[in-house]
Length: 141
Ligand code: HEC
Image (cartoon, rainbow, N blue to C red; front, side, top):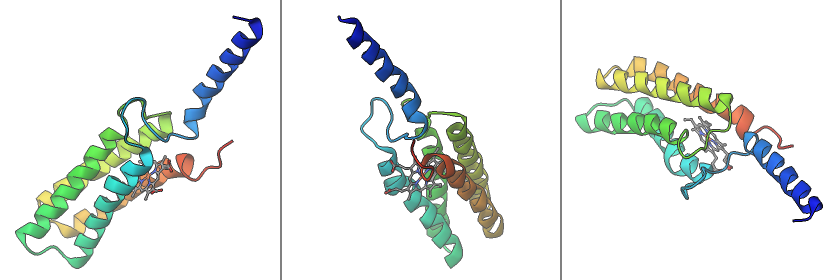
């Protein structure tokens, strides 16, 4: 291989190592993109929790639906770390916040404590902001 080609290849490799920090669009092997994960799972479940709590859960079905959404939000914190999707410490921290926030949320729902659940939703939303500030809104270099 000519020296020039080797130099170009190594340059491309170096850049590809830096790229994921600012644009984490997908894991390494699975088809699910981060955009699909957000639009298909994360956002709908957060909205379901917010609307369910706002409406005031009354029946067993209402509480069961809230529990499902909290558990799926929790699971999404693990999915976001899977398949080499995580590019840095900020991402990892945000996923920890999401896992902790949704665990306390699920516990409050389990106890049917709507006031506590509403407080814990704030922790979940904080996790979205932690990650988005760096990985969604920050201008790509
Ligand atoms: C660990 C990082 C991380 C966390 C935590 C996170 N997101 Fe995201 N989110 C992203 C990234 C990265 C994008 C941009 C994806 C793209 O456009 O390729 C995104 C995009 C989105 C989008 C836009 C999807 C679209 O169709 O363009 C929505 C909505 C969203 N996130 C909702 C949420 C909500 C709600 C939470 C919290 C419950 C959350 N996200 C938590 C990383 C995260």
